Amino acid sequence: MFEKRNLIAWLAITALWVCVSGLQARAEESKSPNVKVAEVNGTIITRGELDREMVVVKKRFGRLGKSIAGPQLSQLEGNVLDSLIGRELLFQAAKKNGIQIGDAAIDKQLETLKKRFPDEKGFKNAMEQMHLSEQDVRRQIRQGMTIQQFVEGKFLKKISVGDKETRAYYDGHQQMFKKPEEVRASHILIKLDPKADEKTKLAARKKLEGIQKELLGGADFGKLAKKYSEGPSAAKGGDLGFFRHGQMVPPFEKVAFSLKPGEVSDIVVTRFGYHLIKVTDKKPEKTLAYAEVKDKLNRFLKEQEVGKAIDAYVKDLKKVAKVKKFQAVQP
Image (tube, rainbow, N blue to C red; front, side, top):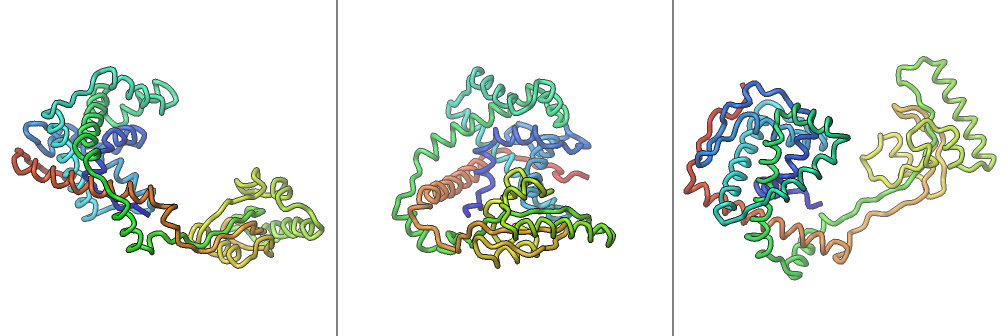
């Protein structure tokens, strides 16, 4: 819910976050880091800057289970370059409007950034991987903070979304606010390699059958999970928390959603091994009430309006700016 964001607005507002994430991501080797890919009113955007941004963006896609290649990669790279140009234009506009970030504020943010690493050496290693100097990082922090202050003053504080608009959006997009059925389950897992021979499979099954007999004799499921389960949830008595359809492997999910709270399954086979599953709670599908989502929805709608305003503003800046693009795609 609320996942679609305006690219320029998102990257502009979170320029500092991009700097942090970029340092924490593994750099991709740039063949020509100093080659310019764009020029914005005389300010150069280099291949290295574009590559660092691409590392962060591709990392986001990776977390969503998506890989980008071929024509899609070229298109994405072009979009990211446009975002870098838009960010630079916003930075220049902010400076023209008198926004200045003092060195003390930069120092504070830099220290906060360094705390994300185990030590100073870890921070410096990350900078080396991203082909950045501390001066480069300070410049990115300054740019991010300058843009953020500009956006807050020019857009965020001036744009509001009322309860009437928020309610109308809620009423018109009921599907967005449906919370799917969830089940909470615990399991006891005896691990088994899918390629294991029959003798190993039989031994694993017999081990779980022995545990099953203890359960039938009145033993506590959680205690048995702590004692025998070979999964990471063993320390929590096998508790996996709540999950929805699609979050577990199909054989496990099918059985878990078929059980009633308090029921324990027979032996279930998945690619991870043999399981006994106990369902401890269930939540039926429901539509979230307006009161539950009102504040989050209002922020989302305001972000959308701010994004539109920034887009329009950047478009106007481009009309009078001297912007040149060079070869963007890495050969």
